[in-house]
Length: 175
Image 1 (cartoon, rainbow, N blue to C red):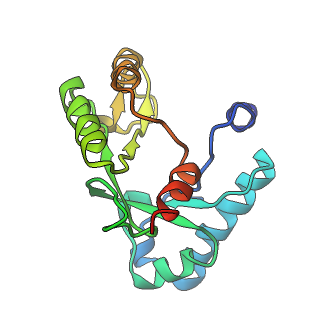
Image 2: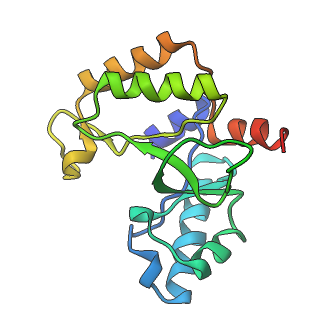
């Protein structure tokens, strides 16, 4: 909890990802409603921040889950690959690029260059940065050395880095 509070205090935006990381697309209405609301409530209690975005576990959801999520969150993201623009923006299914152990610096540089050239929003999803993959996420874990290298690529690209809410505010003003 103290690390979470430190991140929030330092200006990081904290998003919700459910309570139990279950597949919401097959959950009962009571269950997915609890996953959406309880996660938000607990994170707000821990951080003192408003929790306005949600990441669907495994990227899985259905129409009912999405409609319920709209009652709690201003935005959600799945796992569909791509860039977000004012022409294709769905704030309840924000496109992303998932970072895996095999993601190269060249791939990241390409994504950054494409986002910059097309004036689109690139969302990079990191699951775990750990020397030993203590969370057991396999290919979704990267090492601290990989992370440092990727952050250097982002910094050297000159692209503006924003929180989810900052980016949404900017892109919505263009609609």
